[in-house]
Image 1: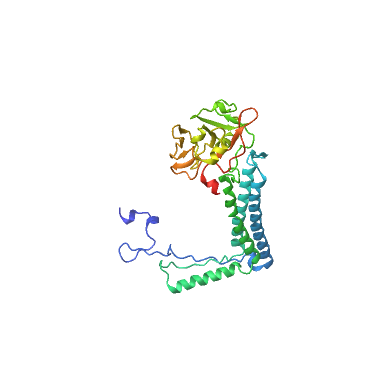
Image 2 (image 1 turned 90 degrees about the vertical axis):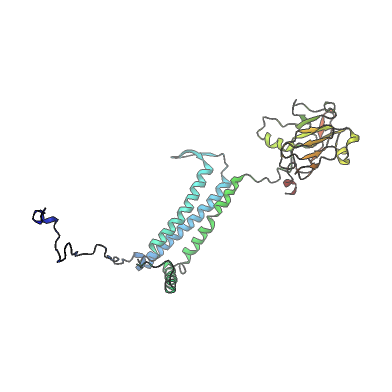
Length: 350
């Protein structure tokens, strides 16, 4: 196709003397520059700046109040309280209050920071050329100078109301995370130091659910017992039996080596905690000839004829003994609670 056959609109506007050379009038990559800066109302009116300052301080203060509300919600609302809130319907009062207060606390800090940047901090755009990754000393000095200038223009030093309320909001928000530690579980307090055993409580056979009598316990036998009044239908049965479960063994009185064990027994019938003092496993393996009991979890071995002391394994101390006697009806009964906490040694030292 010749040049005469090419439409005029497809031909270059101007052709140079060199073959194929084309002159371009405008540079498509030219720097357009920055638009002229327009001052904000806060830049020229101190009353407007004060209004913005009060609005920012209000948001930071709102964040502090919401954080306090978050913490108070843990105290005020029980875990199982359900309330109706339109349009959400029936919801957990605790979860709703925690979500609402924490959301407000975080949103107020963010909104306050954004409003501060948009109304009071300098909004002058500064263009700077790219530089090497390793800055020159002059550049470092310029950065520090720019930072100092930015800090001065932000009003952080002279607008104390904003600064102090922001510090307060940022200091209180982390407390929300500390309070959340409560969900790891209730504090044990002294609940693990005491059991349901008390003076006068009968020993109930866990197989027959009948009160134990001395004649029911034969020499060399092992029987498990629980306190009178505790039933398997009770809501806290597992928690209570984990502390109060007993091993009942009858040993010939002459074969009991420990003096206190003999005094706390009744006609050779001794009662020891069934809970291993290593990690709290239930003990159930008994050897008649040696009067040793073995924990099946980690093989801690206790001598029931010698105060249930540890003779093998990782258990930290002897099994607690319960002092027992016989009531007027001829049934075995407790003469008090255990003298020391049952279970792992941690609770004895705690």
